[in-house]
Image (cartoon, rainbow, N blue to C red):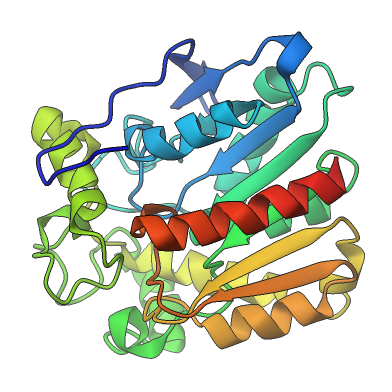
Length: 314
């Protein structure tokens, strides 16, 4: 795909973006791209990272459609055009990661898999990969395999934990400051950063995709996390590290780590993968955090491994 710094990748043909009502009445925005049964290999549940939205992944969705996979994806509550938990769409807030998991369970049961005869594979990035682990632990018979890119197993220190420690996050959330921004980050959102020195990707064209979409629709923008979101994240990380959690995830899992990741710990992802009964690990040494938005040679290496993995799963 030919991209430049002003590119907006248009929506792949044959899909639809609509809304689903969550259990608490919140509007959850989701997209579906079906493949005809005569050439469908399976289904992909694409789970985004924090701040991301459906449009940012149109290129990846096209890549999956070309491989014969129907694609299902959603904007997490408080992201994209899904309703925000605290009424302020610029604040990256959630009360508990269980809110995300409840939404995901509803989405899978009512939209993705009314027909359970079609195998489902999860492709998750960062926070989405983390939530995939928790979802499969709760619903072990739903997913045939998972591909986890830069999964949130452990956050690296300097980005958020340096500003607010785990203990402080829990304390400040408990005394009623849960909807306040993490200190020192109230004027920030990722798409406004300059490309030079960014922590996400070495590909300037793909780096600009999110900002270009936000220029089209400013409502897609999400600000920094709140103290409550940070506290919820730390609690959820503790859950995936509980005794016997990994051992209960018996499906095949390919974990792809980025050698130049400064957002999450690649070494923690490697160690976690080794504890999974059917875990494999791939290191893309030159990649930054957003592997699916890296330059072509790194994406090609990812897709090559992806193809081999799903060929064994299906």
